Length: 99
Image (cartoon, rainbow, N blue to C red; front, side, top):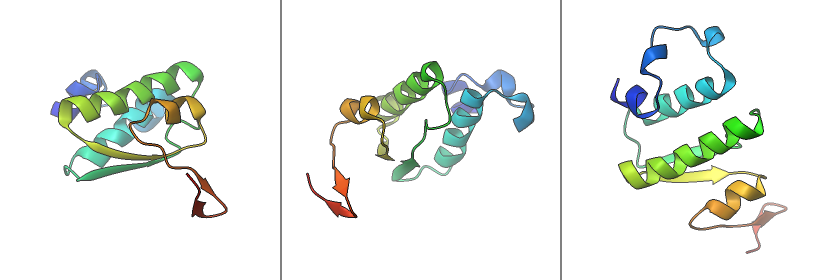
């Protein structure tokens, strides 16, 4: 419930997935990934299915998690806006890190 409160989803705790918006479903997925307190949270194209407003909200959530929970997050994305926000950026091409 602490994670749901942090993610502003406590009022949706008893809802089924089909009753949640796309953004809420993404935040629930983040809560599930964090519940066991992993050393690193890995996200592969986390906002690919979201509209721009929900994508920005999810992006901000990652940085809030980093700051408030001291969570390390590895994000794989083609989203330049999200990549620019990150602390460190690695660029891959043809399976090789080029920068």
